[in-house]
Amino acid sequence: MSGVQQLAVRAAEAGLRIDKWFKRRYPDLTHGRLQKLARSGQIRLDGKRVKSGDRVEEGQIVRVPPLGDAQTFRAKPPPAPKRKEVSDADADMIQSAVIYQDASAIAIDKPPGLAAQGGTGTTRHVDGMLDALAEGGERPRLVHRLDRDTSGVLLLARTQKSAAKLTASFRDRSAKKLYWALVAGVPDPARGKIDLALKKAGSRGNERMVWDDPEGDRAITFYATLEKAGKAASFVGLLPQTGRTHQLRAHMAAIGHPILGDGKYGGEDARVPGMGLPKGMMLHARALDIPHPTERGRLRIHADLPAAFHEAMSTFGFVPGEAGDRLLDEDFR
Image: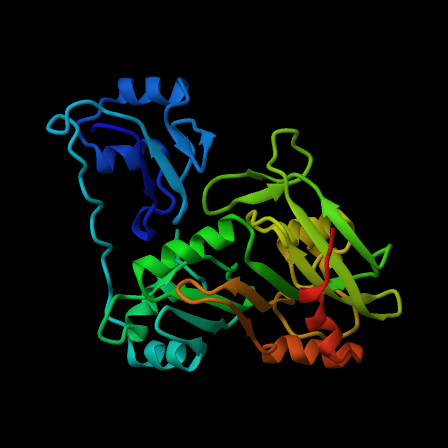
């Protein structure tokens, strides 16, 4: 190749190790040379140095240095992902979940319990249903993710062009995200900033974020307490400024107020004994505000609470209102 390339990771490549990503795209590039390029910093992922074991995520940008003669290092296109036919029930479900659409983007209200993308042992997921939302053109693409048990606004791109723009907005933090959560106890102070680095630990498929590792990546979350039920629980708004895996769950657990129903990070502390709350994690992606990918202005999309979350709110006597939505317009610093 005659020059540096900046290549975006595709959906079918998400989760690959960086060395495997290169092997797929450049099958003639030797492992030894790849290692040398990585050690010298010529290969970068979103501008950062990489190790051969680092994994790539959809939308990340890989810096590919000059690799020599184009005939020797011929880029091999990634294999097309295998698609299963979408069942009528899943097609009806995903179509009914649409809360916004235009020529460039689609937003769905993802139900809790449905994964955004496939993984180990996960065969039913949003990404596998997106053919049901194609309308004679390109297949919609995921541009960000929500945890399986998190409900709410999930944005899709209709075209490759809009996918690149939307992905960039999440990466450069021009996208603003508001989550609602029910947490154990009452945060003190009532409003605050959690600036606590996070690092992945555990094997793939059983990953967990830890906050006591000096090599963690910086993660920032603002929170605001909206209502409280004595000392038992609180209704809070959460505004993540970074997008680390399980960030909100790990941050709230780290300050001693785990999200209700989040046994992974809160254990028994994520329960309120004697309240008879519905099952499930009480974390909801309430709203997204993001620059429109092809037009002037911004998109602002809201998703209503799912039934279990609404039931839990009623159990505590909490009432969702405008105060919770106005957090998206406040200047948290």
